[in-house]
Length: 443
Image (cartoon, rainbow, N blue to C red; front, side, top):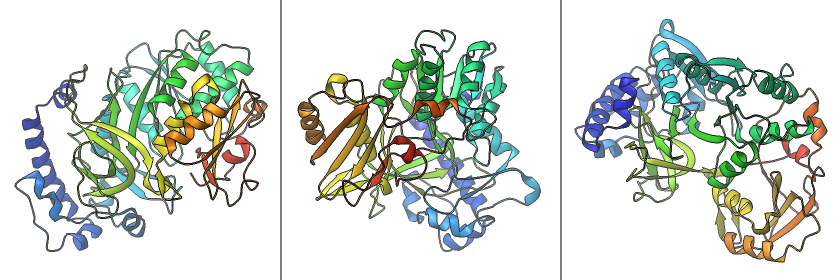
């Protein structure tokens, strides 16, 4: 842990020296990959300042897809120990190879999270173990710190929601690793089984979540449901875990492993500090599949850590969703993070934990389960329309109408969630969250 602590608290000057050294090492490794032998032909072999990074072309997702599975590999096949792929929800999967050192560094990046696994912890790992990587590196980080791991993988009939709740209760588990939506569905399952998730699991101290955009309001919702802290982690299959929550609940970038840029979505030029743009990542420590200026497609902001009470010096990252999932309605652009925050901040507690949104020609239709389905929605609609700058129709339905909770008692896999469907007309949209979860969606 000594190296971890030193890197988290590096001064800006020392961090720049470390990043410059590691960037030049990454450039050297890249030359062994077929993709970069082509892309970097004519580019400098090294740089003298970090500002010179703009001399290198950006790397796109499409280039990684076209290069899969071997075009990004910069080491011999004998050196790799694991292979993973992205989910492929936005196109063909992207291939990722790891050396033993790569896997160790990815484990270290999880250790940067303030969840702070320790002996005595029992950690239920609810990320899927098949082909993706979060479950494996969270498990490795927990075991490295002396915790006991219970692999209750999602997307499998072996461990349905009911079994996870039973294990949570009888094992007195202290931590759950899962998607944010999964934390909500597990709370609903616990209620069906006669538990109060906020009261009946006092041993549960926290969730480490990843895999979805998590706004402040959604984090607060999950914490209220379970009466437990939520620790967010942000990363990609291609890069590793780029940022993790500190003790103050802020996502600090792991800048000893990544050189981060925020670029304009059209020009790929850097935007001013603190402004929204698309995240580009250069991996400073990956051996098998190094990436230079990889454009992730995620909308983010990066701001200096300033006076964060945790004392860490890494920039603070805010993830606001995928750029491809933005909504363009009557000249107004709405990004996923703003949309989720607006819905969850709706006054009078009209909107419950499960909701869905449809896009029509004139605006949005929000269909939400509510404890007050017959309530007057005028003020809520005015709030939402004001926040989003477009007309909003709000439809409140009783709890259980959108999603049959009894399905949580069945043995069935859960797919990666998406929340917004593009509807050509207001009567052409899914009426239940079950339909949305079964694939009728685009975001």
